[in-house]
Each structure stands twice: as C-alpha cells, then as structure tokens.
Amino acid sequence: MLRRHQWNGCLDSLNIRLYAATLLSGDSLPAWQRQLATEVLAELSLWDPTVCEAGAGLGLRALLDPVKWLADLGSGRGWAATDDANGASARWRGIRQEIEGRSRLHSGWLAVAGRTDSIAHRVWNGQVATLPLLERQRRELLRSYRGLLRTPWTTPYGRIGRIEDLELNHIADQLAAQRSDGLRSTFEFVCWLRDMRNDLAHLEPIPATRVLEARFQSRLLQALAYEPE
Image: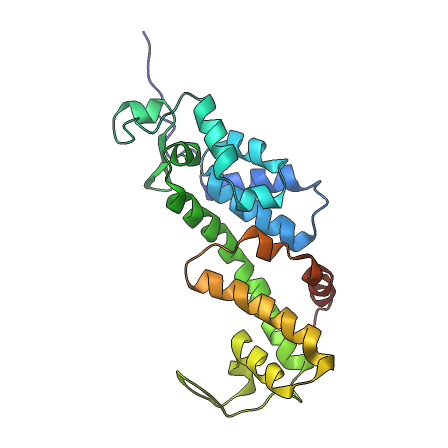
C-alpha cells in the first residue's frame, strides 16, 4: 500500500537562490556582499533548504570558509566518510540527489568526507558572480584615470592598442609607474581588485580575508554608488 515518491527534478538552482536571497534580505551586509553571500550559499545548498537556513545567520566569512559548519551539519545527519556515495542508499539518506539533470553530492557529506576541493569549487562558482562587479570597477577606473593611462601598452602576451582593453593588472602597472604618493591608495585598491580577479581566473576561490579586507570596503561602496550614464 506504500509508494515511493521521487524528489528528482522538483527543484532547481533558481528556487534555492530565491530562498537564500529571502533569508539574507534582512542582513546588514552591503548589497554587493549580500549578493555574494546569496550566490555562495545557493551553490553550497544545491537542493537542500536546511543548508540555506544553517548558513544564512553565520556571516559572509563563514560562507566563504564553510567546511567546519558543513561538516557539523553532515555529522548531525549520521553521515560518515565511509558511506558509499554511489550506492542506492545514498539517495534516500540525502547524500546524493538529482538537480537540473545532474547527480550531485550534498555539501555536508563532502565536508565530512574531507572533499574540501569540491567545496572550494562550489564557493568559487558562487564567487564568479562577482565578475560583473570587478568589470564595472575596471571600466570606472578607465574613465576616471584615462588621462594617466596610455596605449599602446606592451605586455608579455602582446600589444594593447586601445585604452578600453587595459585590464586591472595593466592599470595597476601603469599607476605604479607614475611613482606618485597621491596615487598610492588608488594603486593599492586596483591591486586588491586585480588579486580577486586573478584568484577567480586561476579557478581558486577568493579567500575571505581578501574579500573582507577592511581598508578597501568604503572605497568600493563609494565607487559602486556612482552609476555612469
């Protein structure tokens, strides 16, 4: 008289992102940090709203370095590194689930099993959403410091002929060449943006210490408040 109901395909990444965004909507984080927290939390949660609930109140630093609290969640469900993640029982135990046509492992089990590289990749996936922000900052720097930047600019990888094609590392190099004390804070800000972009480009998650580096937060907020026409 009993029937087993499959959960597969009943939820997608948009559902979990909307739920994560709802849980974080009252947070006092700056908007860009709240967006980053939402994306990372959704990547860690996949199909499981309880992961969203567990992570939503922990703060951005914990979301960017989530192994401990995910391991605690997985251990609380009785999962162990010795579990057969490919066996039939992995599905009804919640270790593995189908989402958007792919068979995925629960982040809590990955943490328990010591699969930290897989968790880091999920954090990286969430952080890639910051790329539009970094690109917006690059364009604003080109606009603000156009008079100090020059082309053609020769790099080890070729010659850049247009100002618009200068990347953050090129802008940093040109500001450094100015040897101006007045540009020191701008140079350091550009280097911070460059280092975050380089982390993502090398398929590495941006460390929490870098994302939350206090001396650049107010400058970034000021820059984001300006919306060029």
